[in-house]
Image (tube, rainbow, N blue to C red; front, side, top):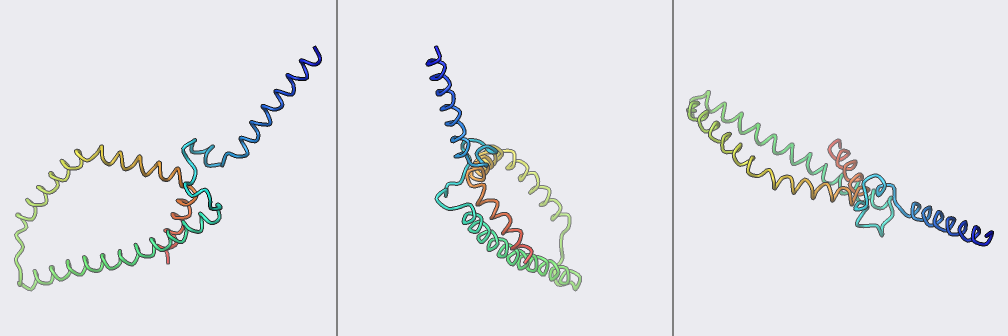
Length: 151
């Protein structure tokens, strides 16, 4: 009887040890985001993944900032030139026609948006899955992107 009790105790101990080993092997993002999470690039250390994500995020943020400034300047400058030309009498704007075209475009956009909803849901789900699988790199990218926008 004591032998059976000892075997049972050893079996329970082995199962507990296996469970603790399993928990040690699980990364924190697996516990937080589920089994399908974790970086695709697991062969790199966490620090390397954050550095890669941060560097690429900073580059993207910096480019986004510069391109955004150029685009805003171009659009603003174009509108300013159109307004100056309108006030100087070089061009005449048919505001009723502009209003009619804008309303037509709004109706068409609303119709297209209602039709595109399932495609947007699929894209959103794929993006969410990608972020979950690459949470470390994504975190670095977001931080780097914000730093790139600020610089």
